[in-house]
Structures are given as C-alpha cells and as structure tokens.
Length: 299
Image (cartoon, rainbow, N blue to C red; front, side, top):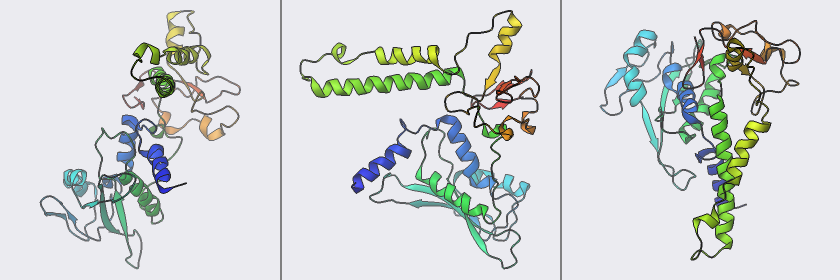
C-alpha cells in the first residue's frame, strides 16, 4: 500500500459525499454537539474571547459564562470567535481547516489547571459530509469529558434516535440501484468503442427497477396494510419499528432498548406494543406527536 492509496481510502471513507452522507440531520446534530456554545456553559474562561474580524474582546479572562453572558456573546460565538485557520499541505483534504479554540479552567480543580475546548467552527448546513474540523472537535470532546466538560449521550433518548420514513428508505434503495447501473455503464464504456457507442447501448435500467421491486417485495419492513376499517388503517400507518435494515434484531435487543423512557412522554404510546419477542421494539406514535423535517418526534 502506498501513501496515495491510503489517502484515497480515507477520502472515500469519510470525505466523499457519495459514500458518507450525513444529510441535513447529521450536520445539525454534529454542529449542535461540537459547537462551543453548548460546552462553555458555567465554565470559567482562562483566556479572553475575541471577535476575530474586529479584534474586540467580548468576554474577559476569568469570566464565568452563565446563561445570560452566553446569550450576549452568542452571535460572536456562532460566527467568528477565536477562529484558527490551519493550512494543511499535502493532506487528504486540501482546503484550510477552520476551528474555534478557547481555554477554560478545569471545573472543581484546586490547582487551577486549564484545558482547551475546540469547536468545529459551525460549518454551513450545506456541508453534508464530515470535515477535518469535525474530527478534531470530536477528539477534543472526548478529552474534555475526562475533566467533566461536556455530557455523555443517552443512547435511548429520543433526541438521539430518529425516524427513517418510507420515502427515505426508498431513496436509499434508489441510490443503490443507480450505483449498480453506474458500475454497468463504466464496464461497457471500457469494453466498447467510444466513437460508435450510443446511450441506449450503455444504459440498462434493470438494476434500478430490480432494487425498487426488491424493496417493496422482500424488505423486512414491507407489510400488507391493515384495511379492516379507516381507524385500523390509520393505526397501522402510525406504527414505528426498531427492526429492519440498519436497526435492531429481536435477539440482540436488551431490556434498556425496550423499556419506556422519559423522553417518550407525549411522543410514543407506552402501552400500545405487542406482547412476546417484539415488545418495546414495535411502538405507535401518540395522538399529538408528529415527525419533523429531521426525523425527530415532536409533540
């Protein structure tokens, strides 16, 4: 393996939008978790926060950032506070890496030690794949947790679980069909003479049709709709499943996953679930619940 091979592997694994698509929800969650504003709450600054564009100091060293102070400096924090730009020569991604870093005093430390909190500089919502700044900020978050800065995630909280609608699953299946078709087109282009070739000879739509038929015909989540009456139909349409591709299996699902969580309040019905091996894995939306644009359940 050469350096070039290693670079292309890392690029295709993390930075290629076709292979690693965070979508808008992934970017929203990354920015929410890795941005400085959520990690500086109630922390004491070990250096001033500076507006990089104007040079103005918006928070002095030694300031404790309570809710009111954070609200005052929020605009600067979200745009250009303590921005550092690193030029990466001869790297996988040739664009400059923008990060935000602020030093704070370690909470409840009598020796007055400091730690650096690094944020991802709030990439634009159009950036749908991981950036080097995200990776740096993620590593910083792990190290900050050792000092009690930041919070560990609750995997069963509905804020960390999202709903994939039928449309999204179908979109993924369509993308798989297109990638198969692309592979066939590339093979035919390499074999046939490019001067006399026509699009009809290159393109075969069977892989796309086959993948969509496979989705509706033999997918784990494909079911006949319960049409006994309109109410039964509505109930079936509002059913949620933790099983299926990319989900859990009945054998592996532990008690914690099946249990009622406090975040289900007003979002998922704690009673309506089948008895037996599927208990807690098949649920229903509550009466006033809805699914927002990111796939999170709101009430």
